[in-house]
Image (cartoon, rainbow, N blue to C red; front, side, top):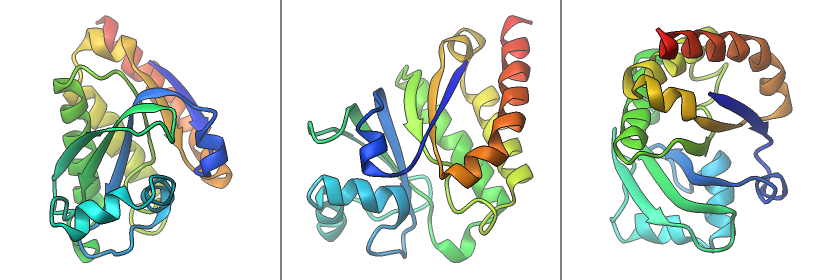
Length: 180
């Protein structure tokens, strides 16, 4: 598994490329916030229109795959609903990670970019987030796919600094599991 980092700004995303950009959103949060809100703005409100037309509502484990317009360097966009913000906790975080990775695995997508769901440190603690992320990948992807994973983690510089060492360990652990 190869892991790289990007800042959540649109100019930084313009420098990235992956087959799929994964965005998450809460069912009771309008307009979209964070990375999803920035991407929606770049896509001229495409996600907002899908929500207004009730095609997307952000319910828990909703998954909508759409082709990406040429406005960002990704081929597809996968939107994953996280349910109501008040219901979001460590367990929901782990379930969303597992669901997201299972969805990507079923589509045979091993090259993707994503932010950790929710606000790390506020909605979910960093340790719990990393455990949920690692367990989600390990349970969703077969060993041969884990070895092929190319993941771009989109987080602020502050969060990236906290994630670098723990994620190096996670990548080593996942690589060991994949070769066992």
